Image 1 (cartoon, helix red, strand yellow):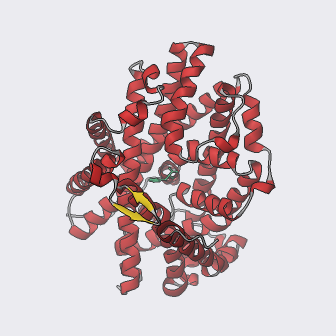
Image 2 (spheres, protein in one colour; image 1 turned 90 degrees about the horizontal axis):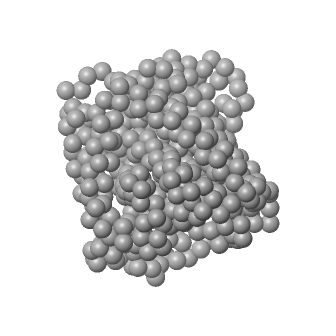
Image 3 (cartoon, protein in one colour; image 1 turned 135 degrees about the horizontal axis):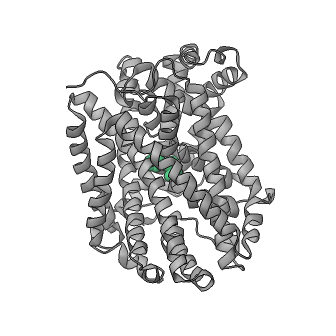
Length: 472
Ligand code: PHE
């Protein structure tokens, strides 16, 4: 059934689609809060260095592997890896990881949709009650929201690469930028907003330690959608004469710029409403920030601008988060979908149906992790902590296998694909690459210290998460 492979129609189409994948929930709240708690400007500098010197080479490797083979991750590794078992395993990891991360990301996206629905219905007051989130996650209305989100995603994905992913990104990404800028302008006009900007930007190097550095790298890695097979798949939709190198740089810059700009919305909003906030006390969890803290902020805002305008501001915020989440979900579900189309030789709609059913069942199960179904809420205990199914998915796939996938692609480039061939691939579409500094840097780093750092992160995570022993 499979016909010739579809391609993005233009470089900008690819950049917007990949930026759509990269810009997600992590950018809007996770990044700004992590920066503020961990040294402000000092964290920002370290983060930017990680993006440029560690993440960009991996990003180029993923995109290059995809374009070279014109396949999704599993077949890409199998083909270039000459079917060797270790590379088939790497391909399998790059296929199952996005599938499982899609499940946990789906749960959060469905909640965001529920909150958006509630705010649009004029219920800001209701969602701002401190006990609301606890009830909400254990309520069967989840199923209705899940169906709606699944329909929206499938509506985009069924159109394929150009008419689906690319077209949706071209509409949704500019909308997202606009909403973000409007919210930043609005928030910066509030009294006390500048206190938030200060906490966010003024560097405090004394806060930087091993765990902050590890956290910054993990955040950069996740934020750029690395290790999830996404950029291999999107790279395979690139044409031979497209410029991978410039596109990769632009995606990294856009993602970082959005994360940085989001800090100019998130922190000033917190400090405008609660001027005495101690940055240390902000929650590390984006989930509790988005679903518990933010609704209260919007509710307090109604004292200043009235309930109607506060509802509008809250709706724009949840719509922004929803758009960011949907474009990420589209990219991540595309990975197992396109692998399935390739392996089983089925049509896009059949593959989407199978993925849709599988992800829906797992999402429903994962969503009952919060007390609704007792055995799902306590499936296993490790490192002395009782874990729910949702926790296990996050620990295994997000925390552990993500850096492992990064390590595997570095080893693949160094020992199997070979760095000269990788460089030749990047040179296609960018005639200056061969003589550039970037070329020398990428070839050196990807074969030496980047895999070393990722191996350390991986070992440390396994020891800390599963055995309760901190190595670093
Ligand atoms: N970059 C996304 C974020 O920051 C991560 C992600 C991408 C998650 C794709 C799921 C799918 O939220």
